[in-house]
Length: 198
Image 1 (cartoon, rainbow, N blue to C red):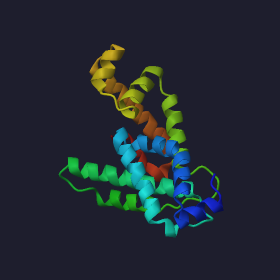
Image 2: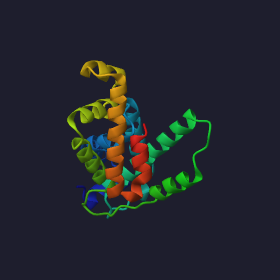
Image 3: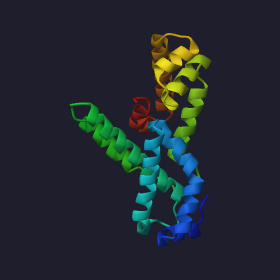
């Protein structure tokens, strides 16, 4: 989407170029981030942190590489760090060393500098497609509770079903989504697990 001149301007620290890139990519970055973090305020913080990192590391921008992929990598790392820290705060045990190793491996995945959809965006599209394929009621419950961040009790009352049924729909949806996504993206098993374990 962005040309070499745009990347060059970013590398030079041109404020107007940063604003243009933010304006164009913000909706896509927000959509991706919300798959990990349903809280809108935290999503805004993570996206802001992503662009701060881009500004701080602007000298390392490669003008012949996709700035979109670079930003998605930064945002992915921010999301994973946030989820890992949140997990540590909520539990008294340490993260499994094998899991940390896999996360570090994911951090190092490099994207092709082409005008192709990044692996992140492909995962987002596949996730949305799998959700759309869920049975109607299950899809509605999962979307409202896990994507829109609504309380399960509110959704149960609104739909006229029990809280236990809401939990059952969510559990089945997670299982179906996880199985389909892991089949498509086996190398992203950690991301997929974190994506659904929130």
